[in-house]
Length: 495
Image: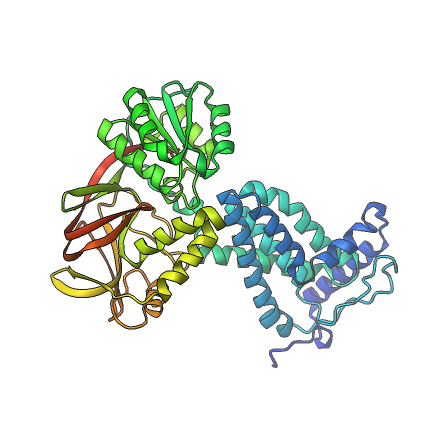
């Protein structure tokens, strides 16, 4: 039998004949219903979903809220929609050649001005609607609840306007929901990869926030986040300061606080972590920068998460990293690196105040990669070689896209080391390393996990970046783990 099946050409058996008859009668029943409120709304809604325009617009509105969960939900919804559309257009429409319903029983006012020319089974609009809504709901149930009525209405509109039988819509919706779950299988949701709640730390519960001193870097645009935290913890003390004063304010706060809080970018969080380690006080991190890797990897995405953890006294111990070189030393909670990345950080800082963080990052990367330079010369793992990049992550990163993504275990005792060897065309080598798997080895790049690292033969004036800060190193550079050294508040699963 040909893979292209014409349902009207089949001689149906009793069950199939019953289903087709029921399908037709449901279509005719819907055509005879008078729904004044839907008369003008559903046809317009159906048209707005053409080519996914409705869902792309919705995703843009969700992303504009600037919350991490909303952005992830929007991205997951669009990824699910894309997979559903590809499946419908390459397999679904070509596998079953079902003709469109006859429009005679459908009132003229409901009919679309432009009738679809593709086959009827399954409904692509219903598939896209279900895929987007399901994908969004898997990442953010709250957003899913908001999107679901719109998706249901789009699916209903395809029967209401007479372009699909009910079974077309049901099949399309099932395929769309399946596409969303398939995407989740490939890229787990944040809820599926919650960091382990270990090793749990005993910390004070502060129901009203008394004893918490939160130092907020005002240059990071933290005012709204700090207000939200203060609403939940009214007795917490908030200290707002300029970036140049952040370290001094953190030192003063650590000397008298029960809990040291910080809200700012990577550099401010780094300073707070080093000071909290030295004073032996627990740390509460409120994401307030551009990337917020450390807070997000902990499971703290905003004031609500941190407020719950502080109120209930929920915290864990996490690893920190430390580097030493020629009398200099520093602590990092995310990563440190040598080679082109520290130069990129400097270029980004130079331009960020003029054009913003993300554009400055792109411009910095272009300037660094186009510059005429020699790779870093260092002895790595007993062998002297030129290096374009040495990235050392505090904990194993799981890639999502072209850059290291998130860490699911902040106490694994490992550095995630990624090396891009020297040679011609550094841009191509860096891109190849970014596209490669986390443990891929090749003449151009390599990745390993180790508990300690030593470089020697580093030239004077070599730049080292750590958590967004930049310093100079030379000679021998040693990196070591500080296992479970830092105590941080974070909401625990099931609490």
